[in-house]
Length: 521
Picture: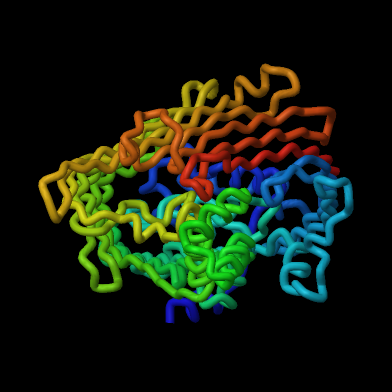
């Protein structure tokens, strides 16, 4: 029913500047989480709006782009021509692109109509949308950015654009915002339509009401009660696209055994050829092959309540509580209560007490979820399988400020401590993220600079006996700088750095670099 309800609706993504900005962690937008859940307040959703050029012009706007992007861990050249066509409240962006691979040859990426017709067609449309996020009705089809349910306990600033334009995922958002006398708000989200072909798909729905709104009583009328459900129908869905090949060393090993060569001698012979370890390679082969066939779902059900104590233009104070539990009957749940959200002019902040039991993680479906859901090296495992049965207590806090239009800062930190369920061993769940961006005053004063920001994100701090800023597969950081070349032409340098494990379990780079030149007219 969840997938059916999500599939009935359609819509999409934002303009080229918004695309790059969203993909570079719009999760770092300077807004409190509670504001993202109040869909009816236009002031609180300003940062989520497309720029004025998107869908608000009466005539089409064109864009020509050229630059270097990361495709399959290689640096390719991308040439693109796009046009944004506004039609009433609708907006459609047509996107034509060509890729030149690392060998200097034109790639058929996005043009293989014979073998990948859906991919070839959908890459020609960057987005289709109706309305904007703060409107009573909003539909967006294509790239998703900074999607939060409630106060973020289950889904927190989720995006399907981590690897754009290498990957163009067909996501969906459908929102009804503060309608009817009791203020009904509905959010439905689907991360990627194409995963439905692999018995998968990450989908979610949230329904919230303000039951006392008709009374008009201060504070009481603003009480909001919501329920959310998010489910990854197949965490192994990405494995469907893996190219799994039987290792050459196994063939040589089998051949030596057929000649009655002793096992130890056969193993040593294969290892000495440099073809690898036949036993390890064989295990890895079957491990990856089985992953292509596996199905494993994971979902969370939750609820939240918010009470606005003060709701003024320059000052807002809200008390809230939230809770979630696994949908598979396994022991795992968490609560965030009490929580306090503050908005005071240019400052925003959240502080909440958190408690969890069993195999549970706060903000499980987060910005990096599509990268973390399934890990291939050194062995195949899902994000859920890494959850440890703990009893944890601690705090979560978020603080941000717009300092006189000069500097925008936003960061959050979670510190939970406790012990494992099956012993006295102490355990922790610590995570930190921060962003620093130049404000409008700076970008207007510095010639040719249209934007400058740096971000850092790390989770599971100390899990691998690592220190706060040590490199692990749970760390991402990067920067984004925009240079104005001439009127209507902008060069955007976007670099995101991360790490993953190779087949030996060692860390290696997992980076995304994009250098794009965009001309709009």
